[in-house]
Every structure is written in C-alpha cells, then in structure tokens.
Image 1 (spheres, rainbow, N blue to C red):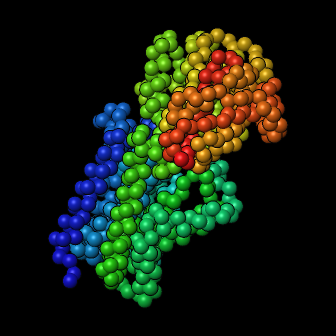
Image 2: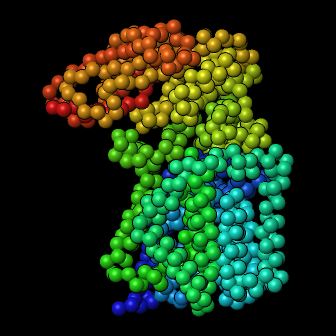
Image 3: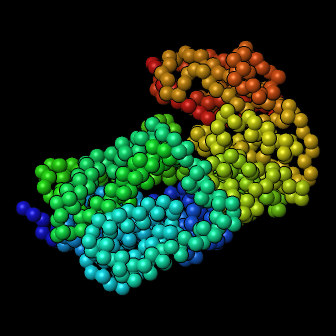
Length: 622
C-alpha cells in the first residue's frame, strides 16, 4: 500500500527536528576543528579574500560572532542554519517534479545521507558550497518549469554564494551548464537576458578572489590548483569512488547510482515528462569528473566529500526508484544510512569527551586528532600567562595551534613561527599578510613559546627544535603538557626578552626523543616482562628514566646500553651519549594484577627538565 502524504511528512519532520537537536548539542560542546579556528581568526581581520579560501566562510563567522559573540555557537550558528535548510531544498526540488509524497521521502533520504546530514555542525567552507549548489539546482529546476524573474534572482544568489564559498564551485557551474544544455528548455534559456544577468552577478563575485591573488603572487590559486596536487596517477586517489560506500553508506550509494543510470536511460529515450537531462548533467559531471580528478589530485587531505554535489540532484529523484524495491531492502537502506549518520555524529561526540577520547587512545575508537587537546592547552596557557609578566607575548609553532590559542585566549596578536605546516596547508601567505610570522624571542618583552609535538614528524623534529633553539639563543628546559595520556603533547618555553645570544648547535638542549622496542602498544605480556627502548636528549643528556605503570613510578630503567643503530638512523643527533642510548627495565607484577595497564616513561634531563612521554597499553596475562 503506498504511503499517505501525511506519513512521509511526519517522518521527515520528526527526523529533521531530532537531527537538528543532535547537531545543536555538538555545536555547543565540540571544540573548534583546527581549520575552523583559523577561519575564525580570519573573521577578525575582514578582507575581500584570503590565502586559501574566498571571503564567504570568514564573513559568515564574523556575522555569527557579531550576534553570538566569540563562542562555539557564535562561530557556528550561520552554518547550522544552512545545514538545517539543505533537506528542505532537496524537498523543494523533488516537490517541483513529483509532488508532496516523493518530496517528503527525498527530504528523508537527505537526512539519512551522512555527508549531508552532518553539514552545519562545523563552520567549514563546504557548508556554504553545498547550500549554494542546492540553491542553483533549485533555481535551474524552477526555470526549466517556468521562466521568471524570481528564478533568475534565486540563481544569481546561488552563483554569488558559491563564488564566495570555495575554489571547487566552478565544477558545480560546469555541471549546471551541461545539465541545462541537455534539455531543450535549458538551451532556450540562453536567449533570456535574465540568465545572463545572473551569470554576470556570479562572475563579478569572483573578482575579489582574483584581485587578492593578483596582489599576492597568485598564492591562493597556486595552492588550490597546483601546489597541493601531485598531478600524477596515484593508487590512493583511485580509491576515492570506493570510499563512497562508507561515507554515503552502501545501499544508499547503490540507489543513487541506479538513479543516475535511470536518468541516462530516460534521457536517451527522449522522455520529456521531466528534465532527465538536467538530472543527468548535474549529477554525472561532478561524480565522473571528480572520480577521474581524484586519481591525480591531493590525497594527503580528506577528499571523500568532493563528490557530494553530484548526489544532490539524485536525492530528489531516488524515491521514485526506491518505490520499486522490496520493503526489506528499503528498510535496510534506511537502517544502514541512519547508522552512518549516528556514527558520524558519534565521532564528534567522542571528540568532546575526555573519557571517550581515552578509549580512543586505547584503540577502541578512532582518535579525533584535529579536535582534541585545544580546550586543555588553552586553559593551561591562560594559567601559565597569569604567572608571567603582563606584556608576555604568545608564539605558537604552527598556524593551527596559533589560531586555537587566539580563540581560547581572546587575543589576536598570537605570533607564529615559519613552520612547514603553514606552507603545506596554504596558510603561509595569509600569516605573512597579517605580519604574524615571528621569531621565538623578542628583544623588548618576554615570550611564551608553545609547540605542538604532533605538528612535526619525528624524523624532522630534531632539526626543527634545534633551529628554534638557535633563533631563540637557547631554550629553557621544556615544560611538557600532556593531553589524553600523552597522545597529544605540547612543549612550553618561557623566554625572557633581550637580544638572543649566539648558541652553538651542540649546546642547544632539545626535548628528548625515544622509542620502545617492547612491549608494543596493545601487546599481551606475562606477569614478568622486560621493557626495552632507546632515548637521547641533545644538548643536555639524560640523567635517568622512570618507568610508570598506571601513572605510578615503579622503578628506574637501566640507561646507557649500546645501540649503534640509533645514531646511524638519527645522524643529526649531537648527543655525546651515542651509541649508549638504549634502556631496559624488568617489571614483575604481583598476582591479581592481570588485565589492561598503562605503561609510561618519565625522562629526567641533566638540565633539570622532566618530560612525561606518551603512555601505551599492555595486557598482562594472569
């Protein structure tokens, strides 16, 4: 029996309200994503465009904080509103073509797609990009039905918003053009002045971005189109279509791809009952184009969301095909999709809960690296600044940590070192525009230097820390602040003012580096087992290494065993202790101590430094 119009509407409204409530909880509690913090920082220095994105996202955040203050809700509420409106735009497109019942079902499918359902929980450029895509799709559908000034104005709004959202929006424009050209009514629109006025408005919206690039050595264009992409075939890039089964969910992806094939067949058959060519073009161009592009493009950053614009027109048509499925498959599709949405939101819940993050450190859950630790380091730095002179400046080693500290401390004068991460993520030019790139020491006032250990790969950390030390004229012993059992570690260095003295490389006391041979993380051991590893500390040397079990000291490791391979690998280490940098310690647990335990190490340097290292879990057999 086909559903009555009231039932699909009730289901949609209930799910829409529930999802909005869940996203609101996330918005109010989840620490800012690393990039979110930088977009907030950009919003405090309004410009016509920025190094890595157009102006839309920072300006939306500026609007949000103008109303809600520099809070999580203030930063995110404009994006939450856009995310909440997206299912309604899918509903609107489907209603235009198929009527109320299919429209409510299409809206429900939009709520069930994890990629779309989570939109608006974070203040990221993909939110206005996706919203603008839906607006343009809706405007095109409106104009194919009846030419009107309102349709052209709606299209102009979508084109302007998309131009202000992201460099990827031209793919949406190309898809819309192909979709319209596949329809006789779409080709007829080329004779309408309103279409050209809408396109002109959209084109003018790109001028601020182009002007900014012309003034800044085309930094944004170079990063987005050249520098970040290898432009050669990569196996990992070829997997982009396959990961869609995870992020769209399997049966929903099968339904959407089946809808694409159906649209192609109906268009080939000349069915003019609805604009099948428009659906085909607007879906196929992003899906096929980005699937091919993904083979040659950036694989170091996430790209699974790139194909989302191609699914949007298919969502409006998919309920028609789904009606022909057996009930068990329809139910399973919604169950799997709902599970995907809950998993996506659950990941964000993990990020805001220290207890759940500890389980993630233990391997039970995926660790939310880009969300974790920001609140804790912000509070710690604020407390540390209270102990230092009032004019102490704050300097972070990379753009992401600097932005998070600026947000947490409510100060926009946080300095940044010239870290490779700034260049890798296309932020170096923006920091240069702000004159935010600085040195570790200031001649006129004290500095609190904060380094994020995970921002620098271990192989490069030794050289990077030595470079900082020489620029600063020497570093005091590192103050180590750990989050989530050392999964994240921050190094703090209070540096007094004055001209930096000359320091030789071998005199630079650097943070300790170490690794453990056994037992490894997650390993099962007996009640008596040996702990072995290596450690060195350039410029100071290691006085002793304490072994910790569940946070308590259980003994000192025997340090100074021979390990010539360590010095061979770390050829830039200047610790004179090489090759005697191995350590060992035998642990014997009393009966009844079986189960999971946390092992840790505390390195005492000869310079008085005390550095707690990352903890790892072992399972002791009874």
